Image 1 (cartoon, rainbow, N blue to C red):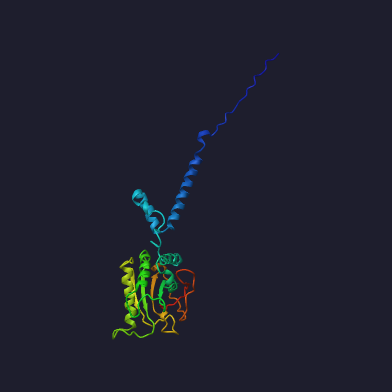
Image 2: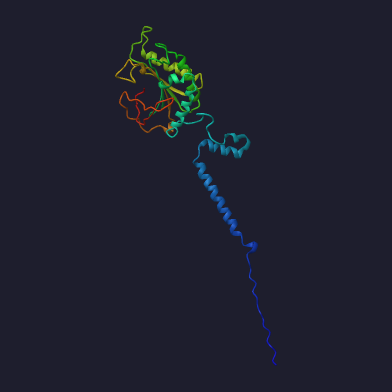
Amino acid sequence: MPDKQPIIVIKRKVQHGGHHGGAWKVAYADFVTAMMALFIVLWLLNTSKQLQQAIGGYFKDPTGTSKMVGTNLNGSGENIDLSKKNIMKLKEELEKAVRKISNFDKLKNQITMTVTAEGLRIELVETEEGTFFDIGSKEPNADGRDLLIALAKELGKFPNKLSIEGHTDSKPYSGSLGYSNWDLSSDRANATRKLIQANGVRPDQVSQIRGFADQLLKYPKDPENSANRRISMIIQYLPHDAPDQLAVPAQPGALPASTPGASQVAEAEHEPARHE
């Protein structure tokens, strides 16, 4: 019986990657890390300068600059720049400050806040029942002082410049000889400046004071109306946010729209070049 030929079975050993086949994971992790770094850089480019400085300072001195990180609103109004984007927020903060004065209910209808081409205009308008200056006096009375001090504490927190205007009605000044409504309006604006700078507004924050006498009446058809007597303070836009051109003057006698609370607010991008 012939011998059977042995059957030879050849088995091929298949090499598996095992622990040596994960190099792609390292490359993928590097890619994801690089993308995250790119997104962080793009985000930082669109953040405020203050936040960029805080983050940069943190890596240099984590303990010394950690207090800088976060929002730039440290209390009402603090470090807020007046711009077209947040002007209503600033108006609300000022209204909160005004509501705290003891005689707010008496004076609330005499305080107006209007959005103009220059910035946020705050007006203290007199009536027959309520005044901020005694008749013929250039110094604020008790009501005027309380209100101006409350505003000054908030206005001093803004980096924006301020301008102050004084206005009178058309009744001739009957006091000292040679002293006129021009002098009175200018002196009231200057007295306002002194008071607010003594109570929170920085010495370099007031850019100008203006005395208009009765040349820019609130009610031109009623020149002796007590509401023509007023003090205006304008929180000016920062230079980078100023409009490219002046607004078209509005018709005389236009009044701001009313809203409940401490002020009457007008959204008037074409609000007067007239200074009420």
